[in-house]
Length: 575
Image (tube, rainbow, N blue to C red; front, side, top):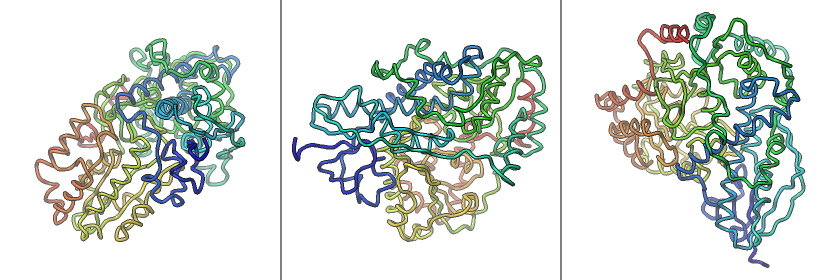
């Protein structure tokens, strides 16, 4: 092989690596060290994106759900010797958010391994692997997301386990020294933090906890409306209905890998989840079945999630409520469907169906959106506000968001927009980055070093959002929904293929495009910004634009005259 040997890097790219001798498994090889590799995205060769096609991504999402449902009982048995004595609903409620997170990484990385082997399997490639005896400790579920799913070491280890099963004869490998990583600390709070946590936990015990946008009085009124027995049959969908036996869908993982799936999952088990004590048995609630609303904290707080699991295990019911974007819009979902849609009811921000997903969907005016109308006061504002979103170098979500290489193009589109923007407008621009996340591409510093006249929007987003002259969004997200309700003049652009939407949502996007709000390219968006900059409000308040805004809000960001309370009280009493 000699000097012709190519090294395939699965983790961090070694410093001073030569593009002629090193290939990157993905953009994550350069995350958090981009400054050492100028123009890395143009110089290095990358493995192909296996799930850029939305049809394949939908297939992968279905495989994730099947894998989660299939492996969950085995994990429960490892965590508890009497797991079968407890209802399935207990384990499903407790474990699904974490098992889904690990399943997404396993399936997505497996697709990448297959693509690399298919493309380069006959070439003399050398691959540094991490050995099996590495150790990872994650204090909580969020620690696994931030440092496992988005972490170089864990992903390098996972890629190594998958590649071992299908290593091409033409390739060579070496095992690097094992790594021991510990992330996060779960410590008991003290002082004010302890009081704050106590109050939060008390609020979470209410039948309807305080969700985003709700005040304390609404929380109490909605909780009182849930004191009755729940009506009708339980609409919850058991996790087994997503499994391979029910759907016929199975991940084509190597046989030996499948035999060791449970131990592989347990490597990523958060300590908080591992140390929980489980009830000996769970009897039926004598006052049930009853319904309670679940907070999104269930994804992050394993102790709160266990309280919900006990509730479900006693024959009671759960309702989740939409807390942001993507719901009812994206072409494929994974954890949202199995954690939230699968429960007795799901409250939406206006939509009645999510094509491709089942659920008992109930449109509701949401308190988070109530009161946003009239908050914008930027008629005489001086700034264009550009708001971006996360740029993870790893594909950790698997729900119709940009792939890693598409994320690289997503960042380049920021450069294309500001580069095409008229200088007078560019000098008025503020850039709002996403908050720092491990394993991500450079954000604000990357943009601002290329456009020194653009300033960073610091402090609370709302302070800038409601005072800007014109808003620009380069992604489909919660800020879009809130800003449409607030009636802020805005221009949108993003690549359809990177943010794949359902046919219903595509029709709404087409309507925004016809009104001149959404644009196919950053250059078109920049031209529109320059066109309306003299008087954005005159354009925004035109009947064509306002009609499109009202139609979009009616289906995706519903509000109601007089506020949401009557609708919520009627709905909760009926369930």
